[in-house]
Image (tube, rainbow, N blue to C red):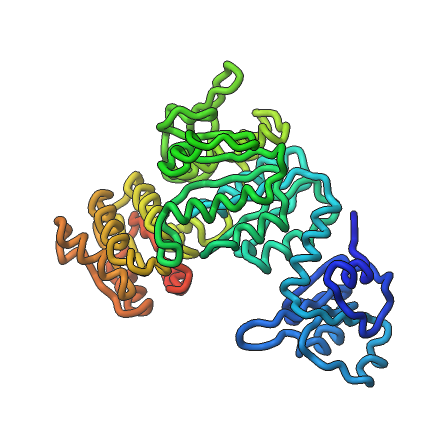
Length: 462
């Protein structure tokens, strides 16, 4: 274990020690006083609405051994009162923890897998972590900790870990660049280039450019793993020969790792893969073609990290999804709910609809909400979702949100009966309608961008 000392924080973050001992060890960090545990270091992050540093007394009273703060005056009586703890003042706590995480990362010579892409980041991260756990003690990104604060906080959790898998999210240029230069991955993964954040970036080509920033932090002898069936990644791979090792996976285009004889089932997927002139059968404990892709990616990462194929297959069979990502719930009425309410893009809507199309159910119900951050492309992409609704034989479509109206309009335009479409003004209306029309043997997909709060719908229908 390589713990950070107070003097390391002062040096790396250009901090000023207000009180305390420079040799105090700092093991655990927290930005939330509600979750402070004895011995934690409190991070007083300043946001748009308030300065978290003002809660430093609460953190210290709850057992924090020290604080990193900004833009606050510490009274003399508090310096005396908390003389056995430490307080460090910095210009910007967010930038300080980024610097600190970069320093902590430099102390570890371990495999670090950085995962980005428009769709499938979280599930791919989860599968890779499960595979790597067959050989290593693995630290991975939890929840939505994939941004300029979450990724550094993940890295600061490094203790006796032997490998790390971090997710990297972005909505504009420069964000992946920041994250990759902190994490310094030994292996980089790009799952797919889709339409997420196209409203901000303006085109899929710009999204590709933003995702490729991950290469800036990838070590020179590192490996890049890409989905070769994605049009933009395929084209980029054929026309770029940088100094990194490129590893491709796919189902349709010729790739280094390919899935064949795919069988998609209700709660699992099975496929064959050839490696070193031997055929292996891989079982994924989640249904859906997209999980075949994610598993192929995990196979690439596992082999790069020196894990035996048999152990890789076992790791895939044991992986568990982060909640609200294609989470399967069977309620008391024997209705199967596919809770994919965490986030949405056109591409993820498409694969989710394809998944429930392959399920044998009494009725296939899609509860779909707005896809956010699409800008001028919103109408076009929501209409494409409407086309997928009809193409995938959805029996009942329920929409919530202004932009989701385009889904309903397009579905009706190309042949879906008006009687099978219900447009709701809010989540409560959707909940009431779902309860009214759902029955034993149905499957219900619940999916929208996180800002639509569709987890409220799931909670009321399970």
